[in-house]
Image (cartoon, rainbow, N blue to C red; front, top):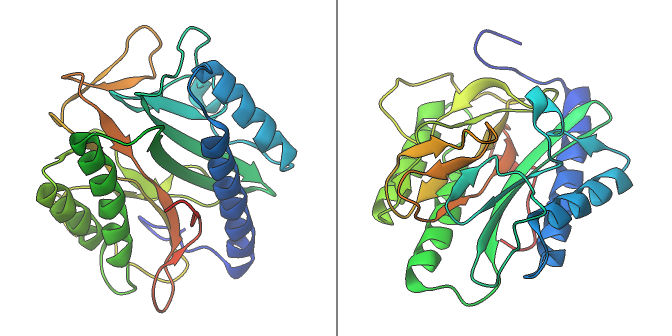
Length: 256
């Protein structure tokens, strides 16, 4: 570690790359098997089985007391939704899954939002715009630039698509620990942040809303974060490795 960022060793990067690939495979399989009629608890248990089958373990379960295997956030839930046996998924829902896997003392972390039917115009704008913001943020993550350049690219795309940026939660470094420095905000106005150097591993994760950028914490469980106005939210996340050339997407998925 050096100051406000971590440069991973070549040996660590080998393990991180594997953990990220395993996490991406689990995420894709969860999304493929999810269907209307199952509960979010069913989906969480499925995720736990898939994670265990890799030989790894959930990075989220018991993390600061979090009770689920993954985060399952439906409709107006931005992040940190917990699988519940009384919450049945319907064909009208959009579902965000945030998946973390620890394997061989390295970490993978990635998220995806999806639906089950042809989306309305507004939902399509939300999903496409959030995914596009992620990819534009990644494109800005070039060696020699700064964290702020990633933030600016995400922010510009969100504004272009008329989507509100959640400011209370941000992206982060990742690799050996789930949350490592630096923070990666999805907005500007806070300075440059550290310079991007080869060996840095970052989670870029736009969390964008159709309505207000304000969110509220559900006091009943102390985890679930909802939009303040009850309108839908989307969340996409990739882990990337800063290299001497273009950033390497460690959690690339077939569905994007």
